[in-house]
Amino acid sequence: MPVANIQVSETPLVLYALRRADDALILGHRLSEWCGHAPMMEEDMALSNIALDLIGQARELYTYAAKAEGNDNDEDKLAYLRDVRQYRNLLLVEQPNGDFAQTLVRQFFYSAFADLYWRAMMTSRDTTLAAIAAKSEKESAYHLRHASEWIIRLGDGTEESHARAQAAIDHLWAFTGEMFAVDDGERALIHAGIAVDPGVLRGRWLKMLSDVVSEATLELPQNDWMQQGGRVGRHSEHLGHLLSELQSMQRTFPGLAW
Amino acid sequence: MYTQALNTAEADDRSLEDVAKAAQFQARIDAEERIEPNDWMPAAYRKTLTRQISQHAHSEIVGMLPEGNWITRAPTLRRKAALLAKVQDECGHGLYLYAAAETLGASREELVDTMLAGKAKYSSIFNYPTLTWADIGTIGWLVDGAAIMNQIPLCRCSYGPYARAMIRVCKEESFHQRQGYEIMLTLCRGSDEQKAMAQDALDRWWWPVLMMFGPPDATSQHSDTSTKWKIKRFSNDELRQKFVDATVPQAQYLGLTIPDPGMTQDADGHWRYSAIDWTEFKQVLAGNGPCNRDRMAARRKSHDEGAWVREAAAAYAAKRAQRQTAQAAE
Image 1 (tube, rainbow over the protein chains, first blue to last red):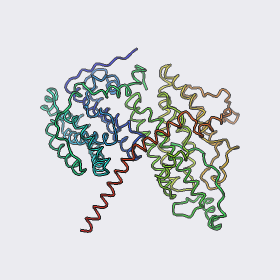
Image 2: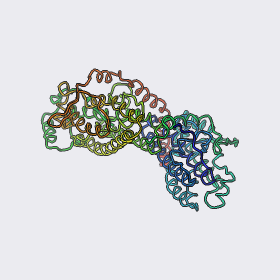
Image 3: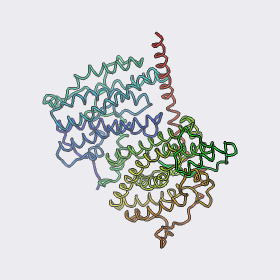
Image 4: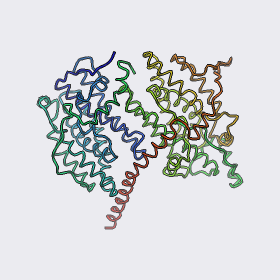
């Protein structure tokens, strides 16, 4: 019995949960690629820890999305049986690990946002999302602290680390705009007090970034052209490869329990 | 994850030590007292332990690779999280053990460099490849099972920091072992394809796992001093037999066949296994296992590619210290 892609009825609430779940899973997966290969054992531990937090968040969000959808889907079907065009994550989180600087800058941009976002979501009228937010906020605060400390060390470390950190910032900057974008479905959820408007977080996000980046003797790019598409399934070429690996067992042995 | 009996014979150095101190030291060992880092100890005791603990640490770190090979392909999110947490535990064991080795006066950098230079050993089991998901279950069940068998007695090892590290490590290993067995149970209750996958993994891992306990007692060169110092409390063959006796019923419960047609059960209940192919063991130890080169290459690559990060952290720490000194002087 070959299992094709599942179909998901993307109501605004389902889509909302799915987008955040996909962010967490894809970034968690990327970080898990470091396990056993980090520059020092402490970072094998730290990056795995962060990956575990994110995968945990993804599982809760997928489970909630499946429940909100009310069909036969579950966390594993949502993770393993949707193709690239059905994934809804930010382009930022699917970008390859690159060197350690690229991984940490990606994490820094995301965690600075996630920390503010989950804190704001704690007052969501949706009690499940508020509960997930309460847990995720604590985790994100720690992720942000870890990433910020590294940005400072890399930026204000050696000439080489400075150059690599700056290159990573320049490379990944164009993927940050998507975090603040809102579509009509989300606007309705914001209006209903279920979601928060990410736009109002941007000022504080930028301030957090600027403070760390300047302490790191680095600079944020002036270029404000932003890539978009992840939220509607128009991804970079990288995501397909990630998914083919992530989903290989479920695609090779359809319908089995593991 | 695990260290095996790799120690080589240590020259008896009592002639170089104060004979009275050596006698006192042995008396403490005999009285089951723990030796602590600042206590006097024979140079050979220090050397033996440094080597054993660091080999154990290297094994934990290299051991992350075969299982890490499946983190990105784990079949469900629950399995993915559990495997990632498990491999992270192995790293924690490595760190913990390097710290224990450091209490003997070695530095982690120096020990890691020795390993990367190919001059230190690690458990040969990690030189075998993980080909299917069932290998992840089998490693947890058998490799961690063998590790526990070896490490439980080390919780009473005469050297305090090592013994205490083993207590914590064994608790985690025991959890890993149950997790591995649960993967096997799921496979064995699954489709024919899954059962075949489980059997194939057992077929490939069984003999290498038995080799984890080290060479047979008759040919083992060095157990004497380790036993006298209460670093080692059971012989390789004793531990191997305990492991086989514990594992056979587990395999039977799974409905799997141990790939040893000659295996028989004694009247006293012990399972007698066939002769082990020690040529293979020696070849793997000599660097000719299926993955020796890949494992070392992976460790060296991470180390080399991470050099600039470690340098950056050190440079930043130096700058910060300098700033603080300058500030204090103002």
